[in-house]
Length: 169
Length: 403
Image (tube, rainbow over all chains, first blue to last red; front, side):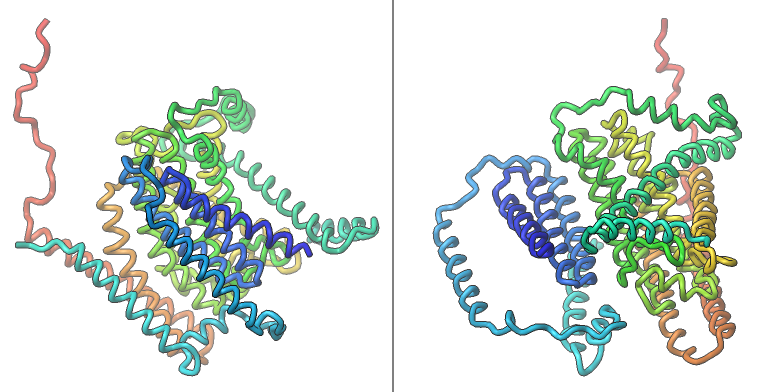
């Protein structure tokens, strides 16, 4: 009961901040609302008993991505107060498409059996983080997707270095 | 016996349960009380830190420091606080009020948040989460958010510049810091701080001295203390991100900075110096608190020592030091530690510790040798690189206004 009340508060907070992100005029305010929305997602992870994802959500999305965004926004101080229209003429199409997508997702989830099945209890004394780590690198687990993602990130990093490289003519 | 905190907790719990309150509410009340007690203790300690900081800097600079109010000037911090409280509270024109007022709270609250995972004693710990090390990194990121908010909301160019510098510094020093944090995690096989303390039969500073040094340096950078205090360099940007803050709002930044330094010292003690471990700490948990604080204050003294002995770095030197020196060193250290740990499966503890220490010493010597040969190469290639102060060419007598 208490958990459900907390979940409702967090959900409203997350969605409300997400709406604020796209509606406020001031870009820095939008970035700060985005941080609040991401924090709401982190709290949802915590409510789901997944501390690792909570902390990783904060480290990556708030600590790295949002701060870099604010950094970039602050460097362009002129555009922080945008006075133009915030919707373009095609807004109804976007609204229609997202409504269709939402309805589709709702229909899919309403027929999904995952909601009614109770998850097996974790045996006591199991370190979730250790299990996750083992699963990521074991051949029976997810080693291939994990390594592919690592190679992708490495390629992106090398690409960034090449773009930033000062060529001596 | 020797564990009054737990006894008081149990006593309160039995009283509250006796009143017929539900068990969930009782544990919530006790948790809240624990938070209030811990935070009050830390903030009172913070007041003492003001005195310690001023007294120690005075000794370093061959002065006496505060000595008028009370014995050894002990009441001086109280007078400082009264002064801060009754000063005029100014909000600059054009400031973003909500963010402007939120920033000092953020910067102190994130420091207090770190103490949630630091084990004070075998029985005293806010939350024994199994991801405590990552939690430290996450909270550090939130702390840098407070600095950005202060710098941006003040509507002041110096404040904004200070925030820029601060962010650049924190982002670059987070990388070696996280890699250095991985080494105690690897040695203890856990990310929980209580487990890391429990694994330190040999203090990790003997197994991984270089990791401790890297963590120490990047922690000072994250604190924004000299020699990494370019985010508030007085000679360049007046006071940096907190330039517009007055009264107690400035006081919160100041208190946050001092307490952050002590928190980082406590973290370093927990990760590398055995935390609360010491003689009889298991039997008498209060001794554990004493040991932790004693170790933390020794590290805090070293931080002050560094602060008042080194000149400020230039921003390019600071970033280069992180990316070109600390990060590669930390990566090499992590790889060597991981491989050595796998190779040394099943050997006795002295052999294990000795090999780890030897590996660290070899890496340190190799690093110094590399730096030396690089410096020699550079000196050979650019013989006139070293800037020398020369007399100005213009004759300044002509510039003096004739009267």
